[in-house]
Image 1 (tube, rainbow over the protein chains, first blue to last red):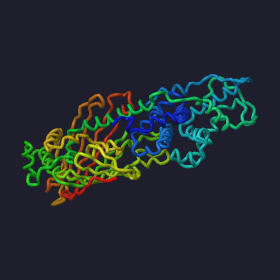
Image 2: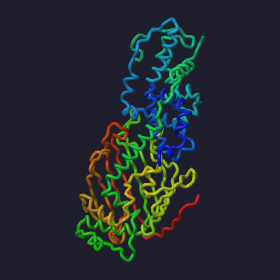
Image 3: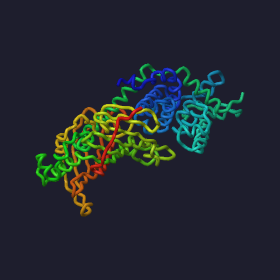
Amino acid sequence: MRSEERFKGLDALVADRGGALLATATLLAGSPAAGEDLLQAALERLMRHWHRVRNEPEIYLRRTIYHLAVDQWRYRRRHPEMVGKIGAGFDVAVQQDGTDTVHLRLALIQGLAQLPPRQRAVLVLRYWEQLSESEAADMLGCSLGTVKSSASRGLARLREVTAAWAIEGTPAKKPLVNGLWS
Amino acid sequence: MTRTIEDLLAASMRDQVAGLRPAPGLVARAAKQHRRRIRLRLSAAAGTVGMAAALVVGLTVTSPSPSTVRTGSSAAKAGGQDATSPQARLVAAMTTSAQLSYQLHLVNTATTPGHQMTPASPPRDLINWYADYTGVYDPATRLGTGINIIRLQSGTLDNPSSYGKADGYMQVRIVGDNYYIRFSSGERWRTGRGTLVQALVLNGGRAWAPTDGASADPAVLLAAARHLGTVIFVGKSGSSIQALDTYRFSYDIAGDDSVKPHQLTGTITVHDRSNLIAEITMQTTVTGANPQIADGGQTTFKTVMAFSDYGVPVSVQVPTG
């Protein structure tokens, strides 16, 4: 049977929801290219289990993206290029003009990419997908406590790496120049 | 303006992924990789044809009439073997067993050795496939039926021990050259042309076995058994009707464009009195020949097939709905 016939509806799903799925995968994987690799890996897994999940493919696809991302140690072995790409530091200094906000957001995204996979997944679920803690726990197949602690640690780490900017009413503590992630 | 880091993070995420669209052909590329993966698995499985075809050919073999069934040394002589050699005794046991109806309990696992969930986690085997099938089959009428328990192929980070936990089942019927399957989720029956093994491999049953379903001839069984390679009689256990003979075998498998050369090892246990096979175990570790694809790493296949209830009546009908 031709794959177009066997996986009927999958093209339409990707055409309709592919942008949102790729966005999630990109946030989890650290770059659009790595995100597309992750989405493709999830699609392959969906095809493998198509007979069982074809009635609700998007749910399965989304869950698989998160599970693959959390299982990053295995995934990264197949995509070693991700390590250097995400790990590269960059120079950031606090600017008192409009670029400050841009740099802050960039720093947050880079900080997100530096978090351990599960912390990153929890933050994406909570603040990108806007899921509750219990919904995030269900998606990742872990306990509510794990979600809470992962979110807390992840946010704490992001506060550290963005300490140079005044957030939540606190003044900037220090400028960061080089070694942002050290 | 005071903003929380949660708000800023959400805004940063929106900026980061604004306007992203998958590149054209993403589904086609995934389908291509999917087909390559299936081919690799089937290729790895087919590579074991020397031994494994002998095991599963009984699922498709056309039986001679009961009057022509020979057992023990007579069957071995019919196969042109020295009836006293371990290999000849195994040929005889396979020949006899493949001509009677039986119950089969088949457990397949395919694992990635030494997988680490995190860099700090201890290495452990990661289950990629898991098939747990119990059924009956009558080679004379070519009818069979059974249940494949679908098990989780991986655990969760919080509960790694959930590997292998039951997660639904798949009903299987074999009628002649066709199989029929239905999942416990309750959808309609699906059908295809092929053997039990193909039903499991191609429909998410995560089984591993060769797919030589077209070789529905007892001669294939004999020919395959002659490729057992090194066969060693390990010893006898039990007594009287419970007595069992155990053989150990190993068999080299040539590589191809999908997998590197590898070796299959296993044991076969035979009822001493009836010369019928009681259990077959085998395992092999394959390494993908192409490191550029995801299955380029090592995968270990393990199979346990337990045969019982020889002569059991088997009645199966084509499902409706």
